[in-house]
Image (cartoon, rainbow, N blue to C red; front, top):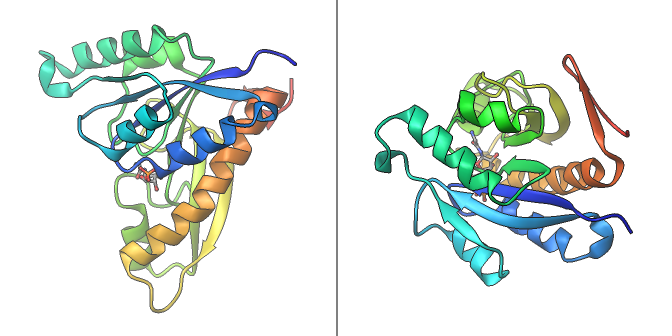
Length: 204
Ligand code: GAR
């Protein structure tokens, strides 16, 4: 069996997407391994989940650096120390910058709780509700310099219900999002992937 694809996962919060990846990686046939988990803050459930799974963790807090650029460089260096094949932003609430993308561009993915190109940014579920769309979902994309603008790896659709609150909708999106993430990362690991313009394809 080929060596598993090395994943570094970056989180800022509860880390349920991280947990789904950790659970999937427990099966050798999945083809990937979480080699480290990083965060932009301390004391979050995502880091506890990594500790429980015996996965090394690190943090890089913006306020510990003299500029956003220095933070970005430091984050890239901390990630690079674990030699990942793919970096997964799973609820990571910071935009990575030029230094990070110089090193990890084309192999950093982010999961977003909306159907891109609709509702980029921090409030995908709230904006979907406010707009009144009947279908929303989640998108996995290759991170570029924009806000949730990168080439799309996978999407999953979720129906909006009349009685939905932002929380209820986001919770339902997250259930679909976790399956999408696990499925797509597994395919990237086992089959490889290519990015041509905006088209992402699985396979060598
Ligand atoms: C997920 O829904 C993810 O798409 C979203 O945060 C949630 C994290 O949940 N990310 C963003 O909104 C990024 N702009 P988790 O910490 O339980 O995995």
